[in-house]
Image 1: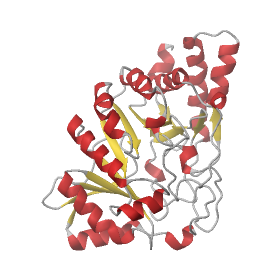
Image 2: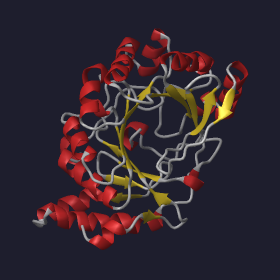
Image 3: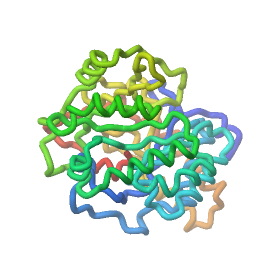
Length: 343
């Protein structure tokens, strides 16, 4: 990549600097969480999915443009064959400050030690309930003990600041926010509570009836435990607003896309497993990075040449990044599921 391209950071039309890439390595998952996927999913054929080498090239290009943090997501990233090879390649990139992953934890007991050894610095683990029957209902067939073994393995592997992610649905698991927080405190973990987003048509529940504000959860936790404000000094941090549980080392995050629009500080973009650069989670506008890569390969271009074309397209796309998302639980405007978007 030329020195000029490498020296430029990604700054959009609203003067937001992009430092954080969420890279989806697969649309497949070993669970079927009701808020994330349909029960009978149709997954992408292999030919439409970026290869691991193509994903590594995309990651390298973004880091050359100033991205400091890459999060591997899915679907479930640990079901992608060869994901350790990709993690190792990305972890070795000069300039990448943090390589992290979001996983459902089901396979983590098998891979936690290896993830740490290839350069993964932090792990987020999805856990919406502590009740085994409710876990099976929310995931359609999952076993919560798999996740518990995964949490234990991640702690044993030496991961710092392991964080739980819980999507809270009114009337489903909202009565568990105190227990989930208490579990995080007792296990020495952080936890983020996430408002459900209206992505993809689902038939398991009406999102307008299960929506719950982050503020109501924060109020419950403050009344039970006491919460202090907590501020990250990290320009590559994600969208969570954090508080600290008094008298503990546990931080509680609130991701509030429905009730507290955080778009003014947006510092991230997503690349789907199909190679589409999504400039905003709540908008359909995308840039076809896979097309650029494969046209270049067809023309016999080197990786360095393809990287130049990718960098130009990515940099130009910053002028298309929208100011904010517009979510309405009563109207599903975005038909792609969260599993296809990159969790």
